[in-house]
Image (tube, rainbow, N blue to C red; front, side):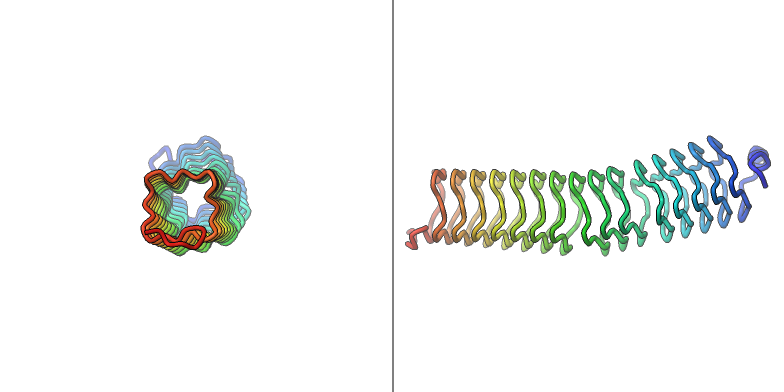
Length: 329
C-alpha cells in the first residue's frame, strides 16, 4: 500500500490498517486520527506534523520514522519500535509508551504530560526541558538521563532507576522521592517545593539556589550537600543529617530541624528565624551572621560553634549547650 491509497481508504471511512506495509511512505501533515496501525511497518516513513491523535500503534515498526511535531495525544504506542525515530516537538499527551523501544530516538521538546511511561528505558537519554507533568514513570530506567529543566511535577517515579541523573532546574514540586538514592545528584535551581524526600540519600548533592519550601526531608541524608542560598522555609528536616553541609545564605525560617545533625555545617548568613532546632547538634557549626530570631534551641548542642555576628534576639536556649561547654538554664 502506498500513501495515496491509504489516504483514499481513510477518506472512505476505513480505520483498520493493521499490519500494513508503509515503509518509506510520505504522510506529512496527513490526518489519520483514530486509525489502527497495530503491527504496521512504517520504517523510514515521514509522518512529520501529521494528526495522529488516538492512533493505535501497538507493536508497530517505526524505526527511523519521522514523527517530528506530530499530534499523538492519547496514542497507543505499546511495544512499538521507535528506535532512532524523530519525535522532536511531538505532542504525546496522555499517550501510552509502555514497552516501547526508544534507543537513539530524538525526543527533544516532546510533550509527555500524563503519559504512561511505566518501565520505559530512558537510560542516558536527553530529556532536558521535556514536559513530563503527571506522567507515569514508575519502574522507568532513568540512569544517566539528563532531565535538566524538565517538568516533572506530579509525576510518579516509584521504583524508577535514577543513578547519576541530572535534575538541575527541573520542576519537581510535590514529587515523591522518599527513600531514593540521589547521592551526588545535580539539583541546583530545582523546584522542589512540597516534594517528599524523607529518608532520601542526598549526600554531596548540589541543591544550591533550589526552591524547597514546605519540602519533607525528615531523616534525609544531606551530608556535605550544597544548599547555598536554597529556599527551605517551613521545610521538615527533623533528624536529617546535614553535617558538613553548606547552608550559607539559606532561608530556613520556620523550618523544623528538631534533632538534626548540623555538626560542622556552614550556616553563615542563613535565616533561621522562628526555626525549631530543639535537640539539634551544631558542633563547630559556622553561624556567623546568621539570623536566629525567636528560634527554639532547647536542648541543642552548640559546642565550639561560631556565633560571631549572629542575631540571637528572643531565641529560646533552655538547656542548650553553649560554645564554651556550659549549659544554659
